[in-house]
Image (cartoon, rainbow, N blue to C red; front, side, top):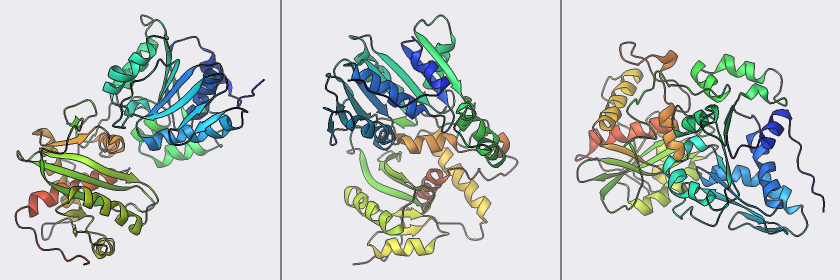
Length: 408
């Protein structure tokens, strides 16, 4: 039976046909990497091969699943295992969608093709310790696709593809504009509206060095990111909330140990969220962690009251009397940075979105935020704000917390 796969444009076809075993694609937004990888995955599986599609989170992996699943189930004899997010084809090949933040192991049978979606945000330990060995017995290949995130391990893989000393490796830098189906004017409008560094990273697919980074001591490849093994070291839990509504709503849950180290062990990062929906999530987290206090954006008293009415101990993050908005933000940033520098603040590695947003938090025009007294850019600052609310609340109210009236 002849199966017709979705068409690829010229640059996609060049990559699909390239003989390199390891392919690294630094892509701009909406370049078409999911379309390309869905075709490569289907071609391999229809030929009897095993394909793993691995993404930083289940939500990231869902994008690949939503592209492949409708194509696969149109093929006679295909079995779709929805609970496992697997597609099995008549010839014995299959595609599995996996999350790198899953607590279950990523070890498994030999893989013919592995797709690492948003590879820059997958912990390098997952690649080296669990994913890479699954390619060995079949000499399987891998496709690393991602927008850049500074010069981390994904950048190192890209550099291999540019270095002739690494046989079997190839890499491409693919700006959004190289997709012939992007509407006219879309990229130009983004260039006008976005900060230069953000545009160059997200649309030109450049590996930025992140001048102007707010939390310079925080990076995915540092001691500030850790693997959560157990909740037993923590004696109390605190929370931070930034109401995003149409923008991302961000929540952090921090466990405090006996040495006053604060570990971010859980959280939320979600768009298009109503306050009742947020209340449901917080009630689940409250039941699991018995959070002492949730510190929220003090500029939204209505949202705070609605969460209190749901039975949650939520208060506005404290401010020093007379403190204006900019100095309030600056003093909170100092508190967060002090904890990072002294090793008293870490983020669990399964919180990929939180790590990404903290790494991307920037001052305007690459400035340091010191003498200029600049407020950080308002580009996806919701995680940074939620974290700051929690740290400020913890530092100022711990030991003298006022009673919070919540619904019975």
